Image 1 (cartoon, rainbow, N blue to C red):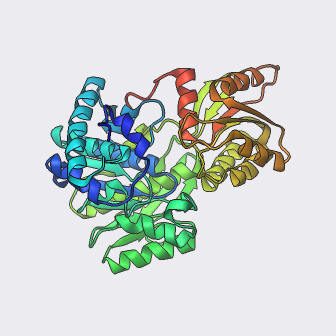
Image 2: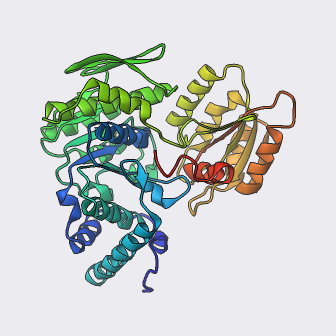
Amino acid sequence: MTRPRSLESLERLGWRFGMETIRALLSVLGDPHLSLKCVHVAGSNGKGSTCAFMSSYLRQCGFQVGLYTSPHLSNIRERFRINGAWIDEIEFDNYSKKILKACEKVRKRLGHDPTHFEALTALAFLWFRDKKVEWAVMEVGLGGRLDATNVIENPDLSLITPIGLEHQEILGKKISKIAWEKAGILKEGIPAATIQYNSTALNTIRKVAKDRAVHLWVGGLDFLYTRQRNGFHWEGPGLSRLFIFPHRSDFQIMNASLAIAGMQILQQNGMKGKPGQIQRSMTEMKWPGRLEVLRKKPLILLDGAHNPDAARALVSFLRKEYPRKSWIVLNGFLKDKDYGTCAKILSPLTTLSLVTEPPSDRTEKGEKIFRAWEREGVSSLLVRDWKKALVIGLIKSGVSSNPFPLLITGSLYLGGACRNRLIGYKGLERI
């Protein structure tokens, strides 16, 4: 077997689920994960934003906070942050070398290399430990029960965002099975919170929580949130307050509300905090790639919606914030995504679909996505090269006195590549 020369070379291994390899890798590194106080976040939509809200709040409380998320938009270093700043390039290279040496020892012990995601997860734990972060906010990569991040044995808090049908070839065909996999992050006696709009998913999570003696806060029952003119009102144990909220979408209100539930749980368990710190964390939280305006004239909007639930939330936002507008939709999807349903959801607001192929080994063939748009009766154009597709989108969105806005969606891989072309790393190095 050829020795990997970079972490990127491990991508050829794809995904491997199970805890044996990540445990072996972390053991070689001295089990850095065992020394960290952790918030662990799983779900289908909103994981990254919820993590960002939690990280922002903990920073407002004066802690040094590590944040590990995936995937990245434009640079892999985005996945690793301390107090909002991504890891330095030289430091990332040095830690990558340490991880590769550890991978070699794991290969000798187990007969195979860790996967790319396992290696990155180990890097995050090691960096956070060495930097003496006081809290680590960790986003699940895929699923939960067998995800590499689930090596966390004793988190201080677990959060589960809304669950939908996704990764069915891996997690299962039914929402109950997917929810069971994601509920695998719940640990015996460790408090948790969730927001679910699917009753089957909620019932599954509640059953797992009951079996593991988890005190579970449920959105809509144990805490409530209602949109107000300039924000939302949150009400639950220990707190009833109107929060001014700069993020315009309903689903970001939902993500923020789940994070507030997590903050209240931490406070009930001894962490000091004040409502004013929550307000500042809501105001200062930034999460690029979600309803992000890249340009104003002509309007270019980026959103990483890649499944039907996220597409519905996107359409709801567009109808509210940009009524009567039709969009040129530059889109591409990965193979395991329900692009047909996404096309159906987006079609009423689409004047032209520009179909392309995201820069990923898992990209779906553009012809299949193109046919899905055709079935919806939407005028479509297939341009496999995403760079050329972006140029065409820019031209078509600005050719008239009343230009159509451009929406880039369907995949964070596509969105990140386009974002990098348009504005580079602006707003990414520190959030």
